[in-house]
Image (cartoon, rainbow, N blue to C red; front, side):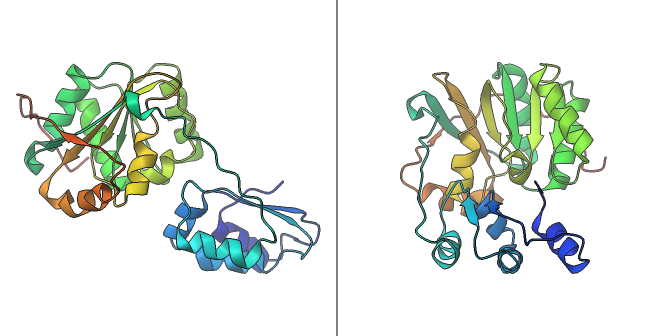
Length: 257
């Protein structure tokens, strides 16, 4: 069994340190996100090295046109399986706060300290923002770890172990790092940065309100996120209500760590 990223597999192919002649099963995981990140050509190139006689399995949270194109081009009489959502939307409370950019972090600290029971996932748009937000949260007494693709595998595993062992209450993550993670008993999702698409929003909030438990999905909306939020709400199945801003103290936030 070989598990790898497209770039690393192509590197082995170019150096002739991997052989494909005996491959019988090819698995493409997180296909939608992989294509969104620009790996479509790499995937096509890898498929070109596969034997004609093989089984191909493709896993994807959503089915955009790029994935559909791959299905039609490379899969022969495929069987399509769709899993049911584990999220009970009746138990998922979705709300947003329209807040000034200068006050966004202060609001997050207030919500985490006063309105969050159980485990919380905080989503940021970039690796740098994950590091900055998690560092500042720790300075304000929040038991937190960061997880993103720039961390070593050992540090990512330590963050997950700390969360599962209840040594921390908050995990700050990027979308890519959080996809596929098995984290149970998440009670709150915080969109510190608004996702760009409704699919990403659905994937984030789907981490809570599972197995009959209630969950809270909170979006911190600032002016720079209005366009992204409009795209999220273009999916009329998403029902997010606005909440009144609570009174909260402004706390220090440093962008240099």
